[in-house]
Amino acid sequence: LTPLYSLADVNVHSRRLDQMFSDAFSKDYQLIQADPKHSLYLACALLVRGNVQVSDLRRNIERLKPSLHFVSWNQEAWKTGLCSVPPVGHSHSLLALANNTCVKPTFMELRDRFIKLYKKKAHLHHYLHVNGMEQSCFTESLSSLTSLIEEYNQLDATKGVIISDPPRLKIAV
Image 1 (cartoon, rainbow, N blue to C red):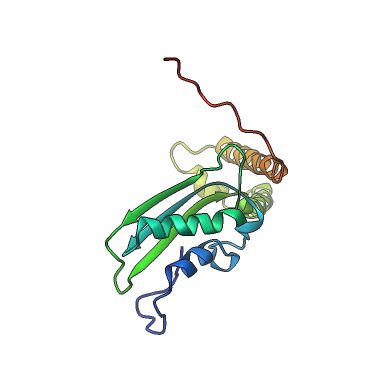
Image 2 (spheres, rainbow, N blue to C red):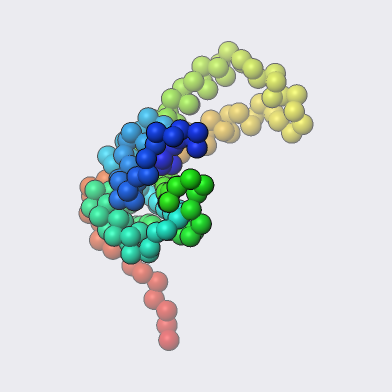
C-alpha cells in the first residue's frame, strides 16, 4: 500500500505516479519485512485511483516487468483496476496486492511461534469453549500452513528455470 500516511500529515507532498509504482514493489514499502523483487510472484493486482490514464498504468507495468520474477505458467499475471475518483487530499493513489513467495519466512515464523504455544497448550482453553472449535482444528491449521510453506519452497525452486510454454487449450471448430 503506497503511500502509507494519515491525512493529518501536512508535510507529505504529492508524489509522482512513477515513483509510487516503484515504491509499491520496494522492500521499504511492504507491510511485512520482505523483499518481493528477489522472490517469485504468482499474481499481482494494481488498483489506481485518481487522474491516471491507462497508458500510464501500462507504461509502469512494462517498466517494472523485467525486474519482477513471475511463475512460468502465469507470465501475464497482472490485474488492474482504475477509479477516476481521487483519494481525499491527493491527486492519485496506488494499491498493489500481490501473491509472492517472499511471505514464506513470515509464515515459517508464525508456524514456529504457534508450535511453541501449542506444545504448552497456551491459550487453548479460550478457543475450545467456542461452539464448533475442537483441538483437531489446530492440527489441521498447522498442517495447512506447513503445506503452504512447502508449496512456496517448490515454487522458489523453479525461479530462474526456463520452462517452455505449457500447451494452451485448443478449441475445435
